[in-house]
Length: 421
Ligand code: MEV
Image 1 (cartoon, rainbow, N blue to C red):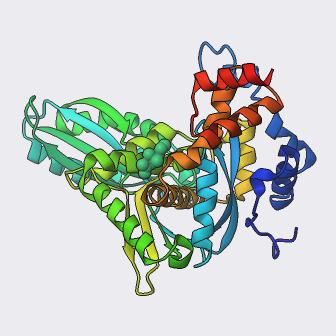
Image 2: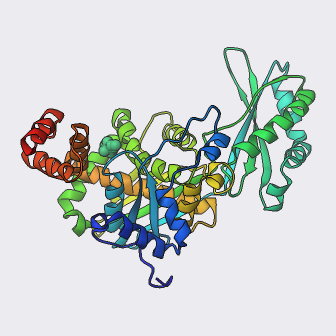
Image 3: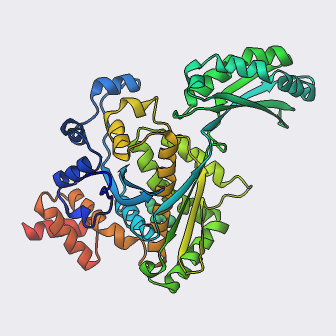
């Protein structure tokens, strides 16, 4: 496949055998035979033992590929690691709707992370805050001396901001170190810098430093994605209006917004895991950002354009890296990055936001039309059949039977197994 004719658009991908699917991805991403074999290998225990403490083995998740994505004019196959059925199919389907109007378009801020340094027992917080600001240059120099490579790459500590907070312990100062972490997630670089600045801050203010740690509310590292979902393909004005009615509840009600945002994270987390990134950091940042105006709300918003198409937008923090941590060690994470053809962490963030928007569109579209259970049922039925003891061809036979009857239950699967024997 030359890069000109390279397309992520496939219909009936799910019908292909696993070998054929791998072949397709191999061609798309120009993977070597050895690289393609990584799909069916597991993380070796020695690597696992170096990654965490007290390792016993590894824990596997299904890895799938979302198809049909165009993001900023580029074709993408998106690897997704998830235990939840329907998620990969839903994302691929949503990408088809967006494709008609050119796919997803994104914007991204610089990769700025925030490190917090908490200063207690300061007599005069206003004067201390001013002293810190007066020594900004020296503090930034000291921070940057901790990571010369980052500085040569154009990153490093860029700014210091000081906040004075009221607390049950009295007034405290929280100094924020703003660090451009380039292609890393950034936790290590930022934490090292904050720890290095602590003695100087204590000396300058006469206070006591307590916490020195990165903030997961990465609101200086924001990504936005936008897509137009085709009116006709959605089923016309009535369906677009039904979608907007459903979405409105997420915009006003935290009970619905939590579920709505969970659906977004179904997509984002799957990609974050597949690329060896820290999904807890992304989750924490996303939900804190969703509450940034004092009430928890939807991370996406939607409206209808003049042609009646549905326009969807998402905005959230995206602290992801393509260097350091598991993203550089885990063979499958490295392979997934290659499939995406990543050159920067920014690009990964933009794909993640687009995928989150696609996932959210798919969920709300299903909820506004046929309901969510229809899509879930077929794979769910297979799982129930396996739980009941079905093997081989019997799994599909029993699952199809239960879906047809509208009775997908463990007891029924067991009955069917006996009747087929
Ligand atoms: C299920 O994992 C996710 C959904 O509940 C999301 C939503 O309700 O928007 C379907």
